[in-house]
Image (cartoon, rainbow, N blue to C red; front, top):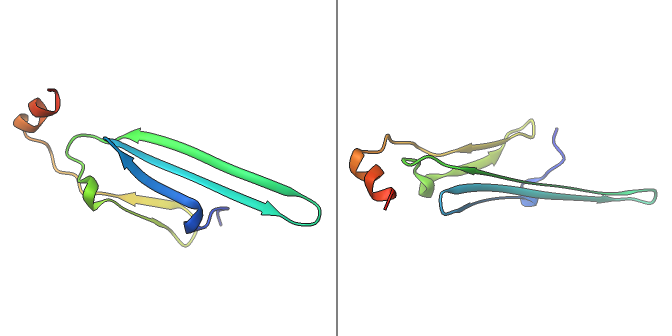
Length: 81
C-alpha cells in the first residue's frame, strides 16, 4: 500500500496543466521522515477538465480520469490565438 493518504495529495489544474503534489510526514521516538512529490503534465486540447475525477485505489495508486473529445479544427485554431 502507498505512503500517502487522500488528504495528503492535491490534484489541481492550472491553464492546461494537470498538477499532482503530495506530502507525507512521519515521526516516532526514533526517527522522522518527510516524503514529497510534484508532477505536472500538459493535458491535450479536448480534455474535459471540469469533469476531471481523482481517487486513490484500494492498493494505494492514484487514478485520474477525464472525458476526452477530439477537438474540431475550429477549436484548434482558436487555441493557437
